[in-house]
Image 1 (cartoon, rainbow, N blue to C red):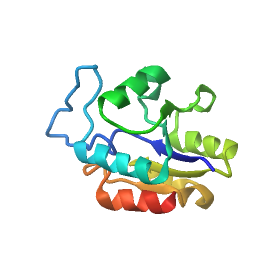
Image 2 (spheres, one colour; image 1 turned 180 degrees about the vertical axis):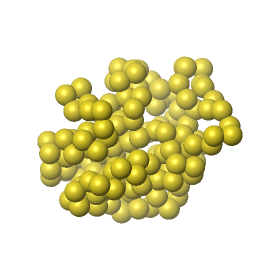
Image 3 (cartoon, rainbow, N blue to C red; image 1 turned 30 degrees about the vertical axis):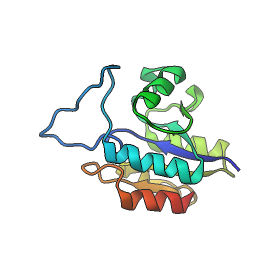
Image 4 (cartoon, one colour; image 1 turned 90 degrees about the vertical axis):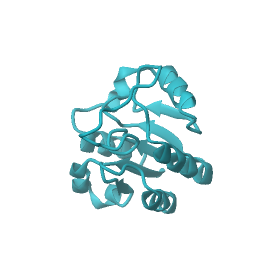
Length: 148
């Protein structure tokens, strides 16, 4: 059975630190936290999960551009953005619609969006809600691996 990581960036891969400007890398996109990269790689290594981008940045680049950006940041595994037909103005609807098309999939949602607490319980049990100031921590990584 395939496994998936539904991944947000802001507050997960890029911890929110209002006093510190976000650094851009030479490819023109934000630099991810080294610890978040290591933790995401650990999840991918231990579970073999595919990454699906649910970030608000997902439509800014094509799948092939995202693949190059992830390779440049030394992130393991396959990555693609959420399918165009599932893109919605609200994250909760995107996740719900994705689940409705993939009800038997093993997945974890890595996000800091507190509105996802309103997901139906059948989906919410897959949510790892990150603290936006800390991003993807070791503790959240262990929880994600356990869910998958």
